[in-house]
Length: 77
Image (cartoon, rainbow, N blue to C red; front, side, top):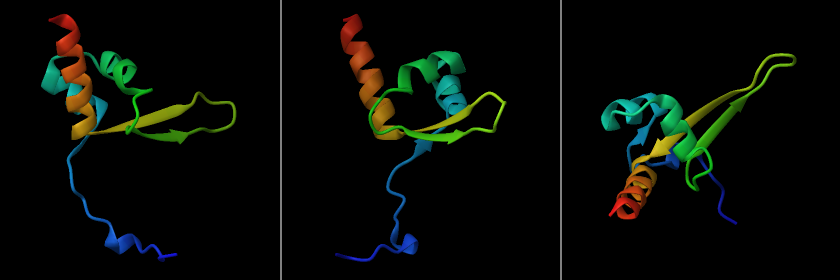
């Protein structure tokens, strides 16, 4: 098995926040979050503290965003 080294990671594609996609598509951040929270390929970072609401940060790769918006566009046609 090959050993993994973090410095070998390559950033191959853009990754968006919910706010960035909301601004690009003129949608609310809540709409973007609901569209992408269960989509395969989206990175979800969970932070939870005892007795406090959970915080979820979504990072959406450009390819995933394109796939979802293409699917939504095709459904509308």
